[in-house]
Structures are given as C-alpha cells and as structure tokens.
Image (tube, rainbow, N blue to C red):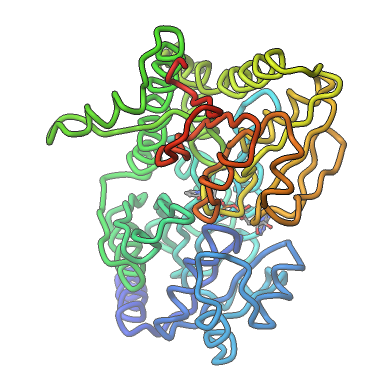
Length: 445
Ligand SMILES: NC(=O)c1ccc[n+]([C@@H]2O[C@H](COP(=O)([O-])OP(=O)(O)OC[C@H]3O[C@@H](n4cnc5c(N)ncnc54)[C@H](O)[C@@H]3O)[C@@H](O)[C@H]2O)c1
C-alpha cells in the first residue's frame, strides 16, 4: 500500500510540475535538456565537475551555440536554472538525468567510468520516490547490469522505492530544424512503472515520447541509429574512392539516386567521421558482441573504411604537392574547417585533426588552419591558432587549400578564385563555375 501511495505521489507531482530536476553533466546534451525544463518553470539544477561551466551558467552566461542566450539568462535570473558541484544537493531532486560522457579507451573499448562514478554519487544520496534516467549512450544492459546494482546498494529497491530508466539522446548540434524539444525520444524503464514515470517527466519537456519494453531495447536502438549512419557513410566513402579510380562523380550519382522517391536515403562522403557519437558508439556494440562470440562485421568494415578517409585525404594532398614546383618540406597547406561537422564548435575526434596530424607526420613545410568556431587546436603536442580572417591575401599564401569542414559562413567562390589548388572533401564548391583548380573527393578528375 505504501509503494502504491509513493508511486502516485511522484506521478502527481510530475503532472503538477511540482518537482525539481537534476541533470548530471551539463554539456552538449545536459544543458539543452536542463534549459527545456527551466523554460517550463520547473526548478532545474545542473550538476557538473567543470567549475568553469558552473560559474558561467550561474552568471547567466550561455556556452552552447545552439541555445538562445536570452532564454538561458532569463531562466537563471528567475532561479529556475542553476548549476553546482555540490552533489549532496541531489537530495533536492525528484528526477535525476545522467548526461555524462561515454568515450572509448585508446584501444577503442567502452569507457563507462563516468556513468559508474555518477551512479555511485547518486547512490549516496538516493531517496525514496526518486526517478533516475540515464541518457548517456551505452551498450545494451548498462542500466540493468551496472546502474541498478549500484543504486540498490543504498538498500532501496528499483520499481518499489525508486525508479530507473534509460532514454537515449538524439540531439543534433547545429541542426536548425530538429532540437531537444521537437525530436521524439525513446524511453525504456526497468519496470512498467519506471517507464510510465519516465515518460511522464520527459513529456513535460519533449513533444513526443516513445515507450519501449526495456532499457536494453532503448540502449540498442540508439546504437542502431548511429551504426546505420556509420555503415551508410562508409558505403559512400568507399564509392567515392571508386569514383576517383574510374572517373565517375559520386556526388552526381548520389543526387541522381536521391530522385527515387522511396527506398533510398542519401549519405555523403567526406574526410572521415568524427564527433562524440557515430565514430564511438558502434565500437560499444562491437565490444559487447565479442563477449558473446559474435563478430559485428558491418561495424568493423564501416569503421575500417571511415577511419581510412583522413589517410586518403592526406594522400590527395601529397599528390597535389607532387604536381607543383615545390617539395613536401617547403609546401604550405591551409586546412579550412576543423570542427567535426559544419556550423558547430565541436572538435571531438574531428577528421580534420587527423588530417593535420598525418600531414605533420610527413614533415609538411607549413600547416595552417582557419575555423571561425575553433580558435585553437592541438596536433600531437603542437598548438596551432586559427588564422584571423579568410581572405584573398591569406589564400594566395598556400600551395594547397583543403576544405575539411564546409561551414556555411565560408565563401567558396572566394576560396576557389584565390587558391592555387583546392582539395574539396565535402563538395562545398559545387556551385563554383570555374573548376580548373578544384580537386573534388570522389570525382576522379
Ligand atoms: N553531443 C551530442 O551530439 C550527443 C548526441 C547524442 C548523445 N550523446 C551522448 O550524450 C552523452 C553526453 O555527451 P555530451 O556531448 O553532452 O558530452 P559533454 O562532454 O559535452 O558533456 C558532458 C559533461 O559531463 C561532465 N562530467 C564529466 N564527469 C562528470 C561527473 N562525474 N559528474 C558530473 N559531471 C561530469 C563534463 O564536465 C561535461 O560538462 C554521451 O554519452 C554522448 O555519447 C551526445
């Protein structure tokens, strides 16, 4: 009877928005989520170990380029949004989201230590009727086999005293159409009640919530989404190499195939994949599968092709230098765009960094870069600062200009007109008329 009363209490509080939300990890995923709740007039506390983020947020300063700075300031000043590194304040929260990183190790094995640390911290302060929702991407079974036992060490039982669910994040930084609130979200709880409560609280901030039968389904569907992208990008990356070999423009091929109104989704080649998701997440499943004597061939093959692309681009650059009246030791290369994808300030696992690293290994005379979103990069142990401005004077200084990230703010006409040679890995110069100096990845010219 007591349990029944508790369950109803939490559901009632959620429906009446009489709850406090805690978000552990206020990065690319956590801050937009926290802001959604704060905007709805729900008291929301961000927990983080990064003191700079905490200070910035408490001063009403937004550090996420996709968020409206005025909204952040308003929510902070109205005391709906705050941040802290005092984890004992988890006790104030009815619902706690975990949005910490899930990277891989140098050997590309899952590193769920951030999830484990957060779970141990929550367990210290866990109280009856709390709902814990893991959002960090991970392999199937993490919520049930790792989180649940840690949280139950508190003496409280899941589904009876507290609630636990997994709900993967789909945020696509830089995407102007799909954001935290209008992108449907999948939810799988340990028990039916866990799913019901998690759906209720997520529905307060997100338009469409899709319940599934278990956390493992939700964990694996997230991996499927990213593996689907990885495999399809690998396919076109392989075909781009074939295009170069046989002199067929793969970009035109993809555009032509895209006119089929059903059964085809376009994916595009590039210098490799980066970021915190598509590159890493497939390895989580491949690692787990090995424990069950299962080899995930598609994942492995896709990774092999995608991870070769920066090497392929390096070879394209070397080949262009060889055609000029210069040497590797004297050649000057300008890399345009180092963020892992267009219009974002996220450098994590960027293929442009890998290209720079490979060029450094070749002892290229001079490597420079320009990216309006990334003021500084570290390649091996060397620090490079972004060129200040992209103009005619700058472009004319280089033997090869390589477009690795096609930021919308770049003037590709200007780039093509003023560079000796442009290696275009994104088909960014597609509208440029005079193409004599443009070497396009995947067209064989
Ligand atoms: N960035 C994306 O586009 C995206 C999209 C979907 C899913 N995800 C997944 O979401 C998760 C978070 O990714 P992100 O991009 O927001 O990472 P992030 O690095 O931007 O943010 C993570 C935050 O967690 C903090 N943190 C680290 N350890 C902590 C601890 N012990 N306690 C409290 N805070 C801690 C960090 O300081 C940081 O602020 C990952 O599992 C990622 O795979 C990310």
